[in-house]
Image (cartoon, rainbow, N blue to C red; front, side, top):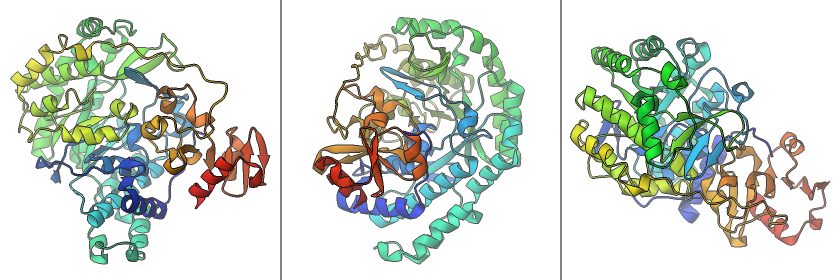
Length: 536
């Protein structure tokens, strides 16, 4: 196993997507939604049909993640946050995700280099346009960039270059490669011609969400947002923290809902942006955005920092998301909507699921994005269900009365009360090396790193796609750790040698029960058959 992700080349991404759609109507093992509702929204000067999609996080880091989400029905994609640090500089311990009734993580921004992240987003952007044209899919999707975490970093040449490339990707090698390769392979298409390829707008996005660290001073947040609006010319939303609700209210809500065991103190509440300062700052920034013809709003909310007390993950602190985050985030929405009489645009991601998406959007809050729900059973397929649950339209401003009623009903709603987590089974002494018992590991992997072979009732692991987030292990009903225990495909000698997983490096060599060999005839027949299917 290795947590080093390797990019899939543009040609492979596109040809795989075309083949899988035609043969199975899937995109990276996710069934393609039959239809996507069109709510007729315009955002950042562009049409947006269905305002639901993956939040900035594990489901928007790699090109194949974005393609899978698009197939499931997502039409807004919050790209994983870019900052000046990446890879080992982030100090992320693995596994970095724990999923139960609620979820926790210890990750933050993209693990890729800034250039690597840029190229992943550009490749996916081109491919989504091509897939929509070729197969008659709804093409009113949007990518939303996310940058952090301070003004110095955002003004650095690398992050500034990223923002410039998002506004106009035409000068990047990734754009030129994708367009040129497509033009030289038009025989792959029935409905894509050279004129269409050349007509794809190289503006990946003009929308950016500002993500700042907990404790970032109010004046620093305002300086960054002003810079993004006036000097960079981006439509800008600020991601706010659930601490705006206040310590006592958060503590009471979580205790009333059965989450009193979640450990936190006043530290972040003391250092985070205060409500009065936030309201004053947001008012000034709204005026500044209007003066320069840009859209401005808030993203609600960031995850909630808590202390590690039960060994969910390594370290001392982690970030809570999912169901218990919703009462906190929706109350932030209420407070800010009251302050601005419903005129402050809100994008929402704090604990959205099938139980609440219809009501939230009907309040005039959109777009809505998810991460925790996609980590649970069904994975990306949950996006299809969310899209179907959309109301027919989105009000032009937040309905404060309706939002207040939604908040007031939370504690009485049994759905939000803590449900017991299923006991995690002990790791068995023996198990199938290519287990396909439930397909959970295939569905819940953000990076599509567990490859199903349904005709053989097997699934193998793809090392190059995996960053060892650990989510598949959380959802395994028999207690194995799929990214360690599954028979693994390696893409290069370095990754093969760095791993202890049993698996194979093409047809060059394999590792079986810890022993390296080259005579594939010595492998069990079922593994040889799996290798033949995967390698073709």
